[in-house]
Image (tube, rainbow, N blue to C red):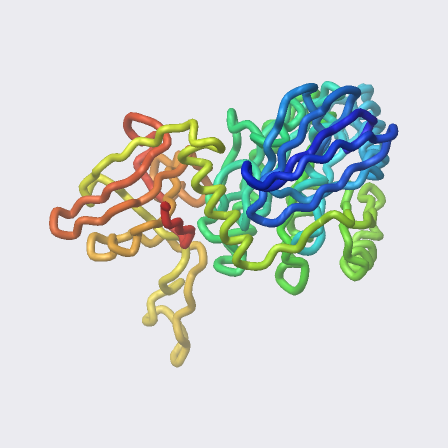
Length: 415
């Protein structure tokens, strides 16, 4: 939090809360650390202050879930990106490299502050009148939509520090799992599909090209995770790589990208306010995010329950099954699982869908499922094998916007 003012912070329950009033000097920062289950309420009494790049409204109590804490020094990065956007906007040629604004990819280990830095850079750009594109490759948590997806959306206004990113026109591809290790080939393919779609949208759109993009990544940075970072840099043509809190990763990326004069690799220290989360906390956050999709952040949405016959839903899994029949393989060779094979879920397998989140594909034919983005999600609440019926939860009323559904391993137990 920066830029002066008299913020008042309150933590704890209503019966045992702690209120503290703090006066901040200009360009100073207030860091507040609370327990995982403890909300934070804050109010700006006078002056100007911002959180995660978004200005706080005066005299209004705001309630925040726990967040990672940013550093004011990230403003310097924003200033450099702002200069690149202005140069791109002034470019005479609207489709050349000179008209392309910064494509920033934020990388680093788990809980290094990548999501927070991404939000700040996006909010600061939007505050200056730009509409940068946010690309979220972190399938474990999901900043744009439900976990298990890679997604992109334009940011037209500073991101609300409580409600997060608006879901008006996101471009979403469903991976279906919480980690890329479940199907690395599929993850790579979906990143490529997303990148190609974004390039089509940028073609001829000088405003979007100049505004550029901010790409948030997952915390898997070694082995295959490192390969996926390099693939994302290539697929999305990133020209600024921000490395948070990892000297080894910075050195590796600097060395491998040193022959690309148009790519800058920058090392940034992670904020001292970042709090590490264990697996249980991250799983709980993932469940909250799924619940938020159906019920809203403050239970302000009313999802609808529907019952469908097995035969009315066409559900597919991606991956599994042999690439070729054994008869077509060399003698002695064993069939290898095909990570991109479409496998229909048969009626005797429907029971496996209980408590899964399914994506509704825009595909018009089954062979288009992998390359198609999705319209939204449903949640399977009950399976009646006797009546051969599925009961599911949908965020909106009416029929589904597509007839093909995708299943992964993304599950949720509604409580």
